[in-house]
Image (cartoon, rainbow, N blue to C red; front, side, top):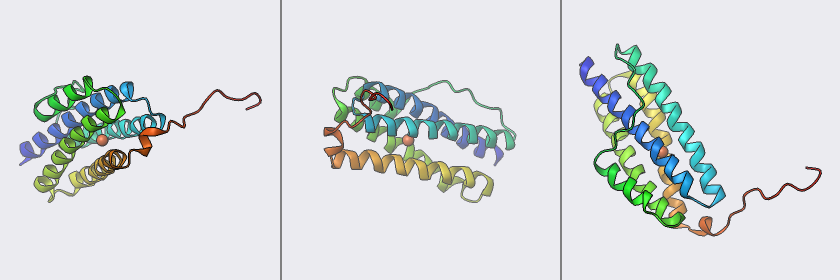
Length: 160
Ligand SMILES: [Fe+2]
């Protein structure tokens, strides 16, 4: 039982590590200021997921896993699309694919660990973040006016 829990938590940890790398790549590629800032916030949330998962893994008697990327399966595809993407829309489409992947993993973790209150406190919080990230990406793609305007900060005027 303990092994099963730790295995699942380690898997989620890896998913969050790989997602952070994907966010980094997307932030480097996306021109739109508002989208980029939003992705930066999401990336910070993934970093918080790692802190919480690491504390949980330790509390369950496991070793803190390394934060080394290990991109596999669906995520490889998403990362390839992301790296070859031209323009914000394509990069966001790759992030949507990566979001599907992270959500699927959190969904499976909820199914498997729903009897463990300590795990669920962390998993449900992270999963709620993931759902919110996914919704933002999906809605931005559906209503692409977000992609048209770049209302980021311009040169500060004197006196500001
Ligand atoms: Fe995310």
